[in-house]
Image 1 (spheres, rainbow, N blue to C red):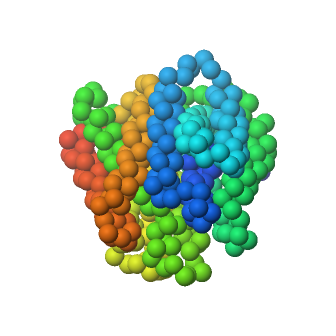
Image 2: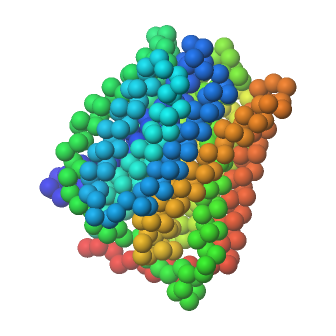
Image 3: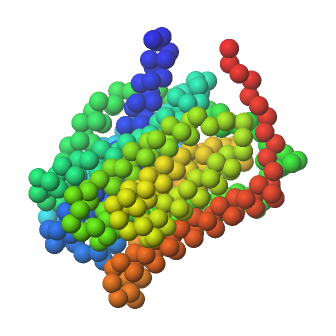
Amino acid sequence: MSRRVADQLTIVLAGSASLAIAMGVGRFAFTPILPMMLHDGTVDLTVAGRLATANYVGYLVGALAAMLIPKEWPQTTIIKSALLLTVVLTALMALPFPTTWTGLRFLAGVASAIGFVFTSGWCLAELTGSTASIGSAIFTGPGAGIAVSGLAASVMTALSFTGQGGWTTFAVMSAAISALIWRVFRKTGRDVEPFYVGRAGTSGRVPRTEMPMFAVAYGLAGFGYIVTATYLPVIAKNAIPDSPLLTVFWPLFGISAVVGSLLASRVRKSADARLYLIGSYLVQAAGVAMSVVWEDAVGLAFSSILVGVPFTAISYFAMNEVRRIRSSHHARYMGLLTAVFAVGQIMGPPVVGAIFARQVNSDSAFALALGIASITLVVGAVILVAMIVMFPARVHHRPQER
């Protein structure tokens, strides 16, 4: 293995690990720990929805903050700060002070968004000129983080851990991984090449409505998956309460997200990324709906897979589409898109809470919420189809490197 390839692999592994901490722990550790906290009696579903919403609001604030951070600030320092904050905030969740939990989850969301934006940007910049597959491999991180946290939560559940023990374990795991990758983040990133080279529209000018439409479509994806991503273990417990497979579905979701990231790295780069997004939306819509119409372990497994596979692939395709539409200042628009996605996520728990307040039982409440989420993803796909018709992209093939 050449030194250059070894350096690239190191960056990929460090970037993937950083995203695993930012997303798998900072964002989604709450999901597998929630059944433990419900069992402890420290929260109910109403409080759980409030904590989830606080995290998603924090993610929105973090995405907006990422847009405003001056370019002169060292990206690697920001990444390290996000890692450190995630470890500290996760550890503080183990303290028996429920009044602080909402604020802690909010700040964890802020750190998560900043870590995601700057880790993605720095790693892709450092990997400019390498093969596309190795660059996109950093997006396996969120899925890997979800899978590892889910498997760890399964073991902790079997050992009768409390929620406090779960938060402590995730903090220690995050600290250990951060220490291993700390020294990798020491360079200054370069400009990043787009997913494919081309102009937006047919005349090379960017229509005013193109970016707003794309942002709306991406925001709908944020709402479409978040009900499953927040409540999957609880949904499984309601559907198959005595099954030994209750703790399997969340790790399966994470593993599927890793597979989806790897598949995304193999697609044809000269094609319109919006086509891949449409396919991803529809696959995820089918997965969300499947947990409603097929309410047993097999149906939940397929649902976890179909929702998980497009999970990070959607972000990968969308971020690269932004770089095509806005070839200049694309980092700012990446932050904007992340913020709109966060708005979609924020709407998820309140919608579920409102439905629970009006439904007789939890099964019908979750069925209605998941049905709305599935339809939302279909609407997002329809918007992307309309965009292809209204704003056809002229794609220029990039010469192959020798």
